[in-house]
Length: 202
Image 1: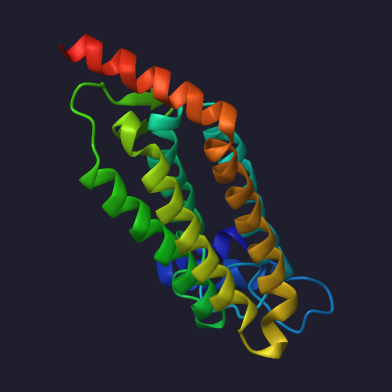
Image 2 (image 1 turned 30 degrees about the horizontal axis):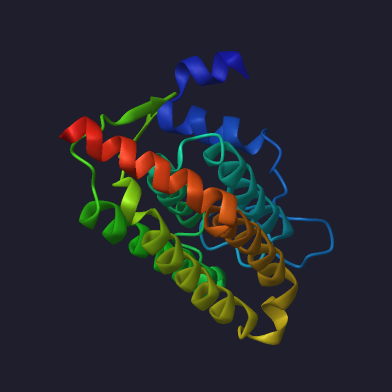
């Protein structure tokens, strides 16, 4: 075939080469859908698992940051997860839910940006800080957005419930982390941090 390829036009050689390449099967065995997470592939347990893991692992990574930086970190986690679903109509409700929380965080971070603190870089990402005194308010706003997102997911069509429930569980883990910011010990630490922050500004 090599002699043929040298003599034939390039497009003919490429066509013949493609015929020899095996078609890769996408999606999960028995799922009834192909694509394995590619755009417009339909529901896929592979895609669902990837989105849930992206959320859970991202939330865990954000929890290592100071509270002032966590919200922008959470925003980027939701953005990355939503990007995995763009172009796939089967996940339209899930995309809407994730974008809802992302937009809420984006607005909150911009509105409460702390110019006294420098952005923090972790790897390829840069997180913007919010004012320490805004943490309780932004926490509540984010929790409310997550609850709305969970409602969107859990009210989805029956054939999507198995997939969306897993994504909703990942969102709930973020809600649990957020609530720790409002525990009594955390509030005391916030108050001390805010006071120290104000003295530095003064």
